[in-house]
Length: 268
Image (cartoon, helix red, strand yellow):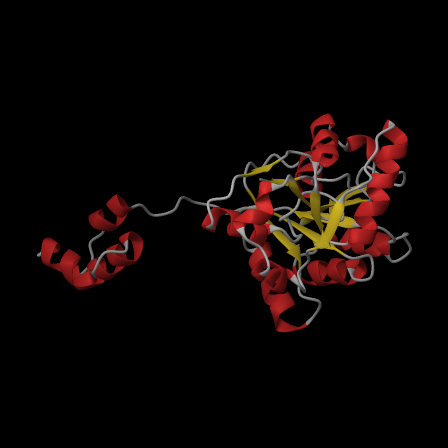
């Protein structure tokens, strides 16, 4: 069996009893970085008087996952197998998804434990009342891909959540301020850590502030969605419009996915 175990994103006390028990019972631990995981288990062992020795560790990350998957079989998972990323929930802007898919494709039992997650924590901290959001992980560092993604985010009617490095946060705020200086942004750094801090203001105000602010640390950015006015047209609205049958058929085909010719014949 495979169990995906979320690890603390800052505060060691965020580890759950269930996660500790699962790690204790693990025989094989796949991890994003074996050094980071060994250090974490050493700290957890000292803090909770637990013994995490005699574990087998194997590296599993974005650069070697395809090679590692080729070495796996159903026999591998007759052991208690655990996967952990360096911090937080596996598969959420972290490796692990291909391992889960391997289990699905090979009918191997697996489970995912609930736990620390920067995306949902930032969403709850933001104070935005929107009930839908999109998560974008880390944006491309530069170029048209980055610019077009920001345009899409700013024109979306869903709250947008993304990660940003301290080296590019000021650049991000500058880009957002140029595109929409009055859009409200929520920022949180170092979630659950000693220097956790939050900010919420218009993009231009935040950009001016951060020219002289300490930007070190891990950042989550929550961007207010566009406020769309009016209601979307329904199929009934299109049907009631005084339009030529061919035009109406094309519009209905786009909305329903049906063939234009088929709808046109019905209209006639």
